[in-house]
Image (cartoon, rainbow, N blue to C red; front, side, top):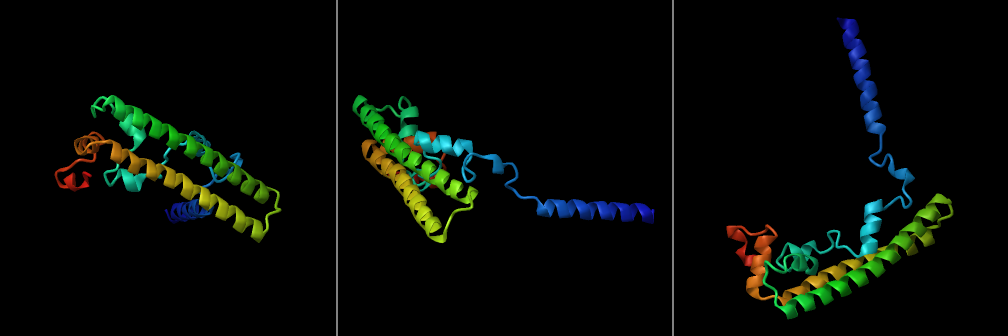
Length: 176
């Protein structure tokens, strides 16, 4: 019995050591750009929101993509639908262009690390550029939510809130 306990304890310790040493990044070393998944690259290039506008969305400022999806249920007027479509197009175009630049910057940063040629100055410059692009992308999406709120009536914003599943008895203060 003691022999089995020792064997079990030894096996458990070995497994624990392996688990502690394993990185959560295993498998990501083969990515084209190590810091971005293929889905993230696709989302940036497509100008998708990828959570950049949560501050607006979750505080009652509708997003144009979702407003278009809910156009019939929100009873958008033809002018509202046209304005929303134009807003969405501008947002997506700008965010996609900025996203393409961000992907290029991330690719260059990855290449510099891969070639072992990166310097402290190059790293600082790359990170400032990437951070600025992320900020511009986020601003693009948040601004679109602000603009969208001006297109909709108060009742439509309240209905959007309900249709998106945010409405509770205590959440009525989110209506703008």
